Length: 288
Image (cartoon, rainbow, N blue to C red; front, top):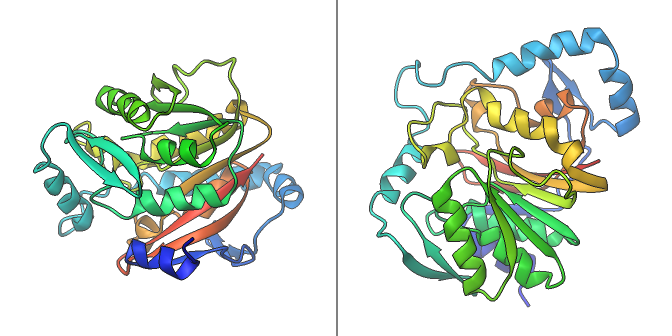
């Protein structure tokens, strides 16, 4: 069994699990300590709070491509590397056999999918589990192999991702229901989930094609719609695990992600971070 230091070494970056949730973050131009559900609900009940935070959400819509220089060069390089992938390439990552596809974001080219999957398992998923934006299905397979009695569900707007995920589940001896859906649009409304995990498009910029939609989210519209529908999709006591980056806030392109979670009056804390130097990824546990 690997210890934490060995797991972090596999990621090749500075990885920290069990992050102190009492750290402060920036919201509405001010620092707030980590807010508990009751105080946050009181704060969000005022029109003044909501009016001020409508500007916070609007800040995420600042254009990313009208600045000097090429925005998000590392992401652009990732897209170029995807262009070299051969269709239906088969790989193995951590004992999981995967088919990868040039039109589906591949966990072989980044460390974030492996970091995110490790964090999910540490939160003891159970019951009905949905991976939103499932991509290759790597995280869904990781969950299924770690929690054999879980009911697996996946969703992606990209039909190539839906088909690849279905094949990857079967390749690893797993069963699951995978929807082609734009977020919640075509997911069975009668099904409620114990956990929804989401590695969303992280960078506030315009997507030009299907692959870029997995990376870029103009105006943070995708994550806003996800958070708006989250309570209705989870069972009482359900949880969501969401990945974020500090790159947008660091570059002055939008608010810090905890501030967006506050707008939706969600109880949340950071449970793991991955420092890659040019940006830091955080995994947020949201509890309903």
